[in-house]
Length: 140
Image (cartoon, rainbow, N blue to C red; front, side, top):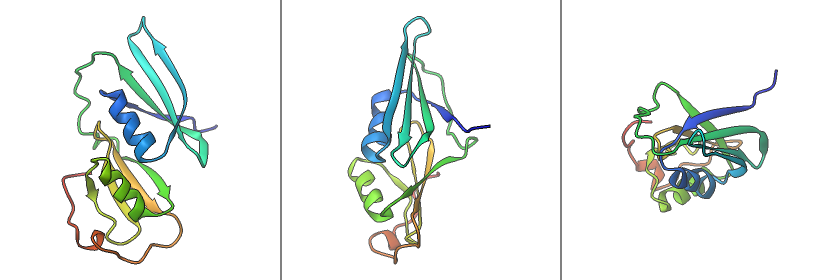
């Protein structure tokens, strides 16, 4: 058996691609538009693990409530510098729901409320401001 992908439904494909590609550095591996089915599939992968993909499913014109995604859990990514990653996401307008106060772990949410866990590669970084003093925001 081989792991293939995790699918998440998205309302705003452009905003979601900006979050995952511009924000987190994932790369689009392939795309399929299906006019008859009125949907687009976009597959993304992290540069260091291209075999494990995220499938974004955009159902054209859908107003379905996808919920808060709390029943899904989260996607997790190891990052080279958790503080730099969080600062970059914050500059893109992403709320850091659980700041990396410990230099090891943070949580953010995608535009469609998918929880994303960010973990520092290797040992935790020393606590650093402003992160060490920031409270949690919302849920993740």
